[in-house]
Amino acid sequence: MAAREMTGVDLEAVITRLQREGWLDDRRYAERFAESALSSGRYYGARLRMEMRRRGFSPEVVDETLAPLLAESDELSEARSAAERRYPGFSYSAASDRDKRRVVGFLQRRGFGFSAIMRALRAEE
Image 1 (spheres, one colour):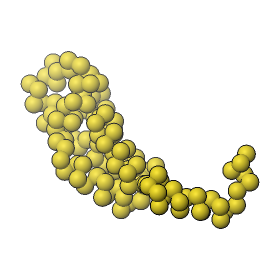
Image 2 (tube, one colour; image 1 turned 45 degrees about the vertical axis):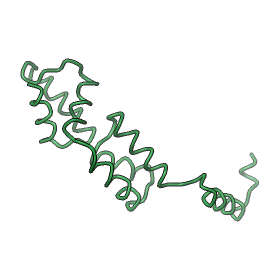
Image 3 (spheres, rainbow, N blue to C red; image 1 turned 60 degrees about the vertical axis):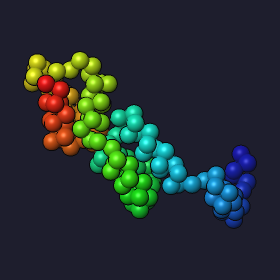
């Protein structure tokens, strides 16, 4: 209820103060979100970029945040790790076509490129 009683000027002053004191920082939040998404295997590449834009980050913040993170990560090992976490013991050569499509689709929805997915899955063989 207290928020309803505040004027626009009061809100602007509070936001400005929080930003000045370092409590409200879009770049820091973007870095933490991207690091968490990459380490958990939730999003990668284009999907991570799209998810950050959907959450309201500016294109500049997204580009500045993802450039160093994606440059130092290895898409093949990340794809392999995500597949292993979701489908432990999956063997591409022994899997049915249906299972192969399911795993590939899962990784594509996470943002991995098709060629990286195929190299990662076949590298296990």
